Length: 359
Image (tube, rainbow, N blue to C red):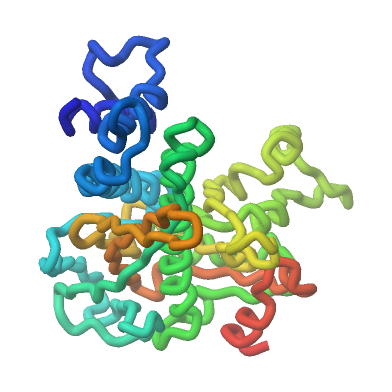
């Protein structure tokens, strides 16, 4: 089978559009891909290391092409409402143009340095570029076990994809949180409360509402603390709709009319001691404005292998270059910090939060 047909099968495995002749509902794309890859690495019906060595770069190219498509799409599906995502060729530098507001020079940028730390500085021009850094992931695949049907290439591939997505989420979060102490952020645009204070969130949303319709972005842990309760005739009231949403989803879908968007959450490793997204913060960002996060994927992913001498298994390693910056007018979006969520360091962010907020 040629590479084009392998690409079609890979699309089928990951649920993407395929030509009509391949679109039969009972078509087993996973098995078909397995069978075709088997032909690339076998001889006389058995795994053959020399055949694998001849064709492995075709396999790597297939994985690279797929990651180049799935990774930006997965990130876009979660962060598109406030993140502008672009791809550039290897070695290119994409310049973003920034719309200036009425207060010239009040826009700021946070961006990654080579060490991965973020710094804020005045933006004196109408366009800027983004520094690029590498992220990577790996999984060990024993091709003989794969060909025997005991391991799935898609399982390992999804591990790499999920790990890279988590790292991108972390980079976006780092850039957003770096603006907490940013010069020029008004005191009305950040809130620090030991618990969820509806009045404080209302004030923050009212401030942001001057620049567009506010949307609240937060972790599921933060959302679970939010309530729309009002006091009427000395009685606290919660709507039936909110109670249904809390019962079915664990959090309300709207706060005082403003949408609540819950960001994906996961843990950093198998110890479950730290979450990827900091649960203590929420971001109130106006919709319809300049997207405050700029994300660039540079070039194509690169796959290589590392052979384990002990058992001849192969660790497939993926490499991708990403750049992230936050372009923000500090007076038009806000951050809410709920210090009660992480008071007992339940999610591994306690020390970080204390250092950032200065508790």
